[in-house]
Image (cartoon, rainbow, N blue to C red; front, side):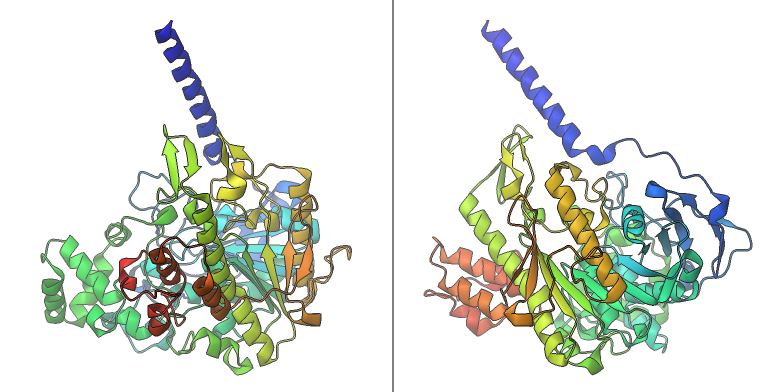
Length: 605
């Protein structure tokens, strides 16, 4: 009897685990049927004639359209070159290759491979309603830490067909192929020497849109750049770049921030102020990995002896697998290489505050800035530092109060750097059309007793399906969305706001004029709109303002800490990177201070 009971319990656990496996891996279902070429979608472009397909909701789609020459061979680590037109029609039915990266759910790749993608990856995708003509264009820059992801994983059909928009999503070079600087690669051309190849790819895609989007029913005089996370930082980079002037007319920054790295940091050895993954340090790592030397000191000496021409040849002979093999891969496959360089040509050699507080230092277009209320949870909800897992399937928060506190400070610091301080700078500079939001949706289900409304809540990236009206793709966590009326209502409102902004540079009351009025930053003391479902707190304006100073003051005065070390760790996590870290302030934080806890001893993630 006892043996039978044990067998039944084991079977029950396997059934539960199987159900959990199925729910959490919906992204691995059989792929949809391939798109079929539709002759009526033939368009003439600078890339050549392209033939697309009819997709969801009757939207016309074109995927895998090249917008620049393949950045391979001598074009590796060079500014993108204008596309050469194909002499035969291009059947644009599937996304082009992803750019080299670690495998991840965002890449849709075999997770057992060390690297996926191809350097021939500068492709874009377009969705347009039938009979489109002179419609607003929205160009999406995907997120993923500027090291993973691709434009083909986002379906613009619903947004395009619902609100009469032309949606474009792009690939751009990432990681060490998108942002890389080494003295041996300099050739005297300021764009090539900038190291900002990923930023230049976004700008080249905008140039392609200017030349071709009218063929797809888009208005080249009304282009909105929008992106999330790293894609939001890249959107701010486009706003900051003088090379992008006139190529776009509005911007939406979802969970972004902007902290350009110095050329010293990205092009020097560590002892000379370089990042641990600067260009010269990457070469050191490659030389060690190749077995040419045994340690960093020997690698540096060998580099000095090799000379520029030999280092350049050495770098060019290396494959993507060689570069990505240097890294184990962090969250979701991301790697910690520096990106977005203040080179003085593509991007100003200035701080974010200096760039966005002056109309002379950036492209001051109408802009929406926003974050999610619980940004850090996406990176915490499966982290064993915060979550216990039993039998491989049962998850429980170790300390819910400490978890919520960590989330609160992380999200507040993100809001400060990604929204409020930028909004304050931009409005002070004289931009009257700065809008802000906070995404508050937190209506996920519980799975095997693990309450996702707490563990995830309004997590990083969860707003993307609401904007696109598509809850089937993304990060492989589609199971968190219940698919109820409240979810549909909030998505409808957000698509409406985004579309109205694309049309008129002001989200107002959405396209139908029935939404809550979204006012510019500072109007009547109001700052941001809070986006939530009608079944929860609803959509409403707020007067909340969060800055680095207010977050630090709250952290210093917080009496809920049982351990001063926890307070110090949160300061490091949220302020160590960039200009916000103040060593004197850190040393005296709270009543006990943090002198005995070197900031380098804490994880920054």
